[in-house]
Length: 123
Length: 378
Image (cartoon, rainbow over all chains, first blue to last red; front, side, top):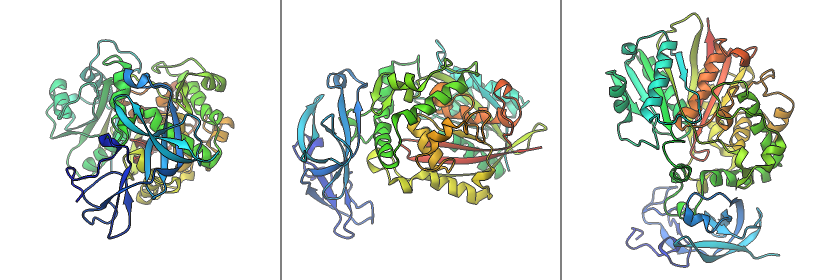
């Protein structure tokens, strides 16, 4: 069951976890939660906890933030991570991360939230 | 068949004290007068949205305010692609015989109607509410992400991107309505304040007040007709997290569909009006639309190819980057300028030959695309 009430808690709910969904019918993985598989339409994709391992796909260091709360953290690096499990996600990361870097998730506070924060695993 | 029979454009920048409806009305009056019509002849209205004045029925709010009772009216929302999406719809309903003259109109006091923080924050909400927005991204950050990857894959440098800001400013220098007219150099762009790296302040379009409008009609109303030859759309995703691979992006898809609809080759195009919210947007779209090879658009700027006297003049009013960006009206200015060029009314900005033009709009984070060919007929 992947209705909002039963969903596995993750960082968007304040838990130190990254959760994705996997479709038993077609094998697709998706990061944005739904009660169905967006690739084939099959119901009830399974919630799975990701390892937190991945590779940097893109990065943008935000220097000009839009709110006073976010400004207190600037500059902060917004990254897109290709997770080892085959889905892509947005997160924060070390300011010097480069495209192609192998990274692992930690968690940090940003404004009043818990957010995934990736650091390099290879020198 | 449909023709753009009149165009109207206010200056962009600060319009202190002007509301969304004021700016829409001003642009609409200009467009209707340009078409040689009276406002009562307008029987269709399509309008965009205003972040400053959100309303569930903006088209009828405007029609009542403007004093017309159209047979067809509603708003359209496709982000930055809205202007061309409305034009495509106007073309379609005129061609289908539903109405004779559609007023396509938009305006917004986006600069003076709210704080800059509020403007940036309102736009950032196009991100995913659960998995993106809580991370504090901004629109420049969404495009900064795309830029970082595009530069990585195709060997594009920050100096390359800066060329587009310089070109748009050179163009704007000759338009009295442009928000920024003081010429800049690549060094100025490189030294401008970092916003969301690799994008710096001069890589980003400004926030503006302004309005734009045009009339789309079944028949040409003057000797030189500007005809909508073909148009198409593509929508591949909404959020930057879901952006497809660069070889499967929507711009090339919508262009291909528009070409298939009217049989025009890219080699026939003489003028281009291309969405340029950021330097990376313009660079990528030019390459997506086959107006330059992958990674080669900047070299074509340097060689003068996209200059006013070059083979493919581009956004001769200064684009979003320098004419300004007031929301939906921002990209409509590209069509207004194209119309002036095609009808030989661009004054000191007039290009040699604008007989066939390609327009392209992008909404979201390269999410929604509209491509359109306009042709001059005598």
